[in-house]
Image (cartoon, rainbow, N blue to C red):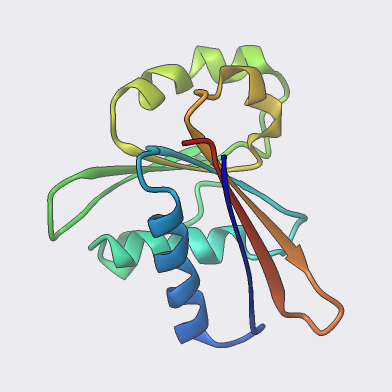
Amino acid sequence: MKETKFTIPAASESDIDNAADRILEAADGCSVIAFHGEMGAGKTTIISAIARALGVSPEEISSPSFSIINEYRSEATAELIYHFDLYRLQSIEQAAEIGVEDYFDSGALCLLEWPDIIDPLLPVATTDVYITVLPDSSREIRIVNPL
């Protein structure tokens, strides 16, 4: 198991973009990345930066709070990227009903917010990203890659 830990300042877009690059590098070999953190920690912001880094047009990126899953396509590689916001799910059965395991098995990159409710369904090769808001409003990011 590989672990990476770093801190990013609170408001710098270039630092968020750098964090996205570091997460992608640390997740090498994993197509499912699960983001953990309290409300407002920056999960959606970092996932948006990851999607942009992979060639998704910024106009295409939005929070899937109501749709649960957004599908993006990289303009650079035409690869699919799935962005999940599982906050509204009430049970693991709901996740199974929408076919989350099919998305995981697709080989496409799956970026998950609020993954705890579906923990038993997550592949063993899931990279976990833990975002903690520090007292100065910066973010500590800890990445755990099982590979």
